[in-house]
Length: 429
Image (cartoon, rainbow, N blue to C red; front, side, top):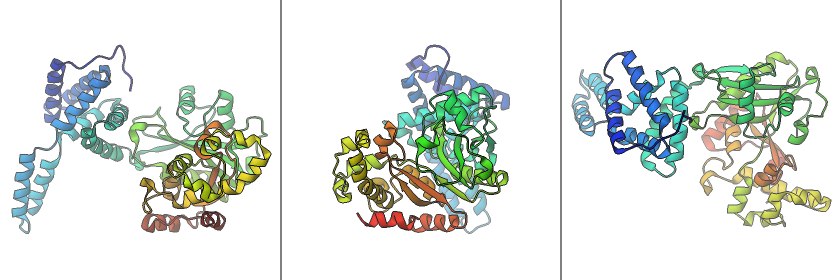
């Protein structure tokens, strides 16, 4: 989060002034104009503070503006006495009111500012950084995440298609925010916005110039297996009238402060509906996805290399130098595919046997009803591709008739939908 001018430290006197301002804000004195004015002054103070000062600012809110324990205890006692009587609902409302922290009131007043929503999103990005070493901020983070989840409900979001004719400032943000496959130049971006491509983003009406999440789509006649081929700027433009397959090859969340606020699944559903309206021949919807956690999993479980029959050391696998050796390329194809299949089938978050998949991209797509369809050996020959997944990529297939069943099985029993080919590979390790 930026701020104009030099960022300053928060002095002892400044802490007392800030505490007084926050108290006024929490008590909500005055009308709406006064509330906005207070919030604007607090925001200006925050923006001018250095990192240490901002952390102290947030800690004041977290620790000194929670519910009053005495009021909660009294309200709870009154509620227990009222249960089963006509006064129960009134006592319940009083208990709910006593448990409502002043932190919520402060955060809500920031929201009333003209740029308040963006201010709070950026503030939470700061908060998440500080939270790594200061767990006392967790209570504020939970409340702020809850507020942002309500304010960024998918019903408020607007789906927009972005084209080469979109404002230059917005196109620059796409280049900045692309998190999966770096946009190397304006020519690269123009290629991703050509007639055989589509790019969609979700926007919030209070942040109209800031894409929240965007997805890049290639219109093809096959299940894409190589991202370099997909992004080749010299490749001929495909006739989109012949397209029967839509490949989602990059999905980027852009706002760190919205971590934990989920709307990616709604984005894909809306995009599929939009594509089907424009291209009646589209019958297949799939991804070409990275496996960003594969190398990390192998590093934590080195025995899996030998189990899959991979004889090259981890460090050599990660550099990708072996990909220039035709003999090694042939020798590693089956072992690396087995390794990746086992990873997708059995690697769990936290390292246990239960729980959701370890891979974040896999969690996202399986949680939206897709199935693991196919592994793509040397699907990403970039340095990043070798570093995170030894050059492997995976297709997740969104089959409209199976999405609901896959989603329910995954959410209820943790069942991972997989094609027979990938499942056989996983069992062969």
